Length: 229
Image (cartoon, rainbow, N blue to C red):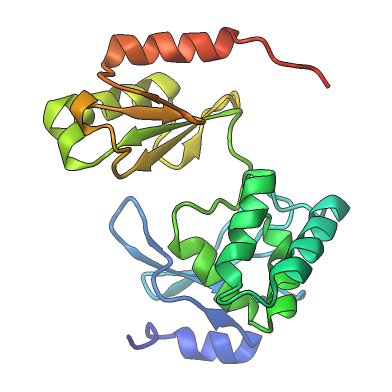
């Protein structure tokens, strides 16, 4: 795919890498996100939207955004995981999975560490993270609720369940509720088709979930005791 008109001069001036169609937004507009920004422009993240450079605040590259602030523990963990897995075949995915398993997300601030350790560009690492919906760049909620979006569940009330969940939690798929309790995520088949529609919370799978059962599960999660360590 060719670069969008007007983008070449901006890339040349800022020495930027870019990704082709990182996402399609709610208005079905193609959005190009520039990565590997120099420090001179990092405080003013830029997107190319409808062939125009626009400022995003906060943006995907805003270092003050939640989950993007520098944390020595994240740095240390990333360096350790890269060191342990750098010789693995196709090491990038194992490294990203290991980080997300440990933290629940892949902090944007460790992208440069991963890239350097695996001899990749930051654009390549960011491209893989943004391509796979499984990977997160911000911390998830205390509970992640996955709703099956596969055909079997869709055929017996899955769409209505998804709409109820979005309305109830007041967040869309791949978003987190305002209170930080729940992250809502789609999943494509939980292997529980005989009990559709199904959801998963953590390692627990629930079948025959309708609006009332969903509300009961959410209520139970909200009142569940939390261990203080």
